[in-house]
Image 1 (cartoon, rainbow, N blue to C red):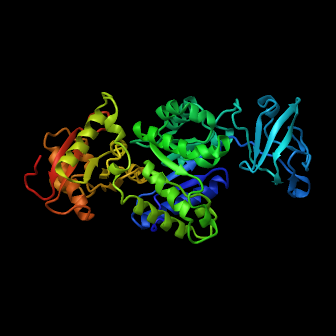
Image 2: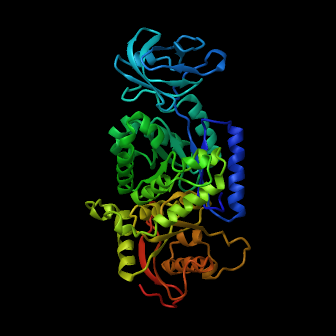
Image 3: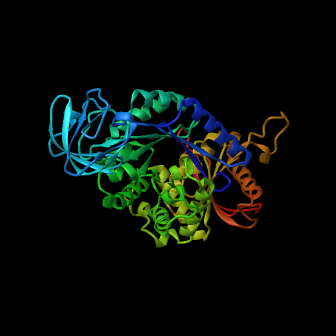
Length: 483
């Protein structure tokens, strides 16, 4: 699947054990290393799960429209009249008239009355109820934390695996994100950068608090499955566009997820509607599109990845400028150095009629800043950090390269043999040109540029900020490059 075009692996902590997931991560990284390709690892925390419990004989029961049905906190074995739930505060949370959805909305109930242990409802939409199915309470505020004890243990384990992204479920407020982000920072073991937080937008409260959540998190996931259940299905496309636009405008990356090629779980080809869905997410400006059951349990995992890649490539034949307004250029001045430098680089590329920008980055931050402009330019991220290289595999328009440490023999170095880390951290006034020469050689060796080609280079750094401080017009192979 990596060879077919996969850029990131999602580890779903709702299933399996830490040991099993650890082996999956090891195998994924080994496969990526053998192919000499970067690969991001995203760990998706389970979050609190409200579910039904067991049924008599473990067999499904049929709920018919109009019949009464009780959900109770008592320890019982369920039947067609009542079922137990693992959510002990259900009677406190709901009021008469509240909707209860079971099994991703396939069964709908309306609350009629309640007591200390039981919620009595009327079946609005019937169907077969199986054991341990999810319960959603749309428009009902729930006073439970986003992270469970299991999530906290899983996060500690994940940070020990040196993963790149952590996805948080059940996000409703910016404070949910801040709490987890603080834990990530505390557990961080990387010298440069850290695992980035992905807030899953799947609750109505998250839509209401979207601006504050985006301001606090590192990136977002449009979790369309739960979002459609928690709100309404016709609003999901509207929310998708809103989430992506707001995230990109605020320099945050976006993952669009759920049922993108759902039919390929069983079939070797997608529907036309699914192909259009993937393309529209690309045109909306998402950084990544995600496959779930298609690759986790489907019959055609490799074909699903190949199909996704072909749809993306086809969608990207349409110029970015023809799709949407350049949001970043329409915003009021922010006073941020990174914005000024990124705008300068994009303007310089347009003026010089080049589609390529190379940025030297230690943590990946400046490459993400450039990506957020959605300029249509190919960004080469040249980094001394393998962690940054892997993390940037998920970011829109960025092709990351890792510069190995060449200073291992103890021999005298020429300028071209100095490592990027040496040059990035040197105080010498001559290091900028030396650094550019190293970057030029990397791109020539990778056949990303041709001699005589003009491109934009961002080099040097602002001390302590990890940001590039120079924007240079560079011509490949010239002894005295044009600036």
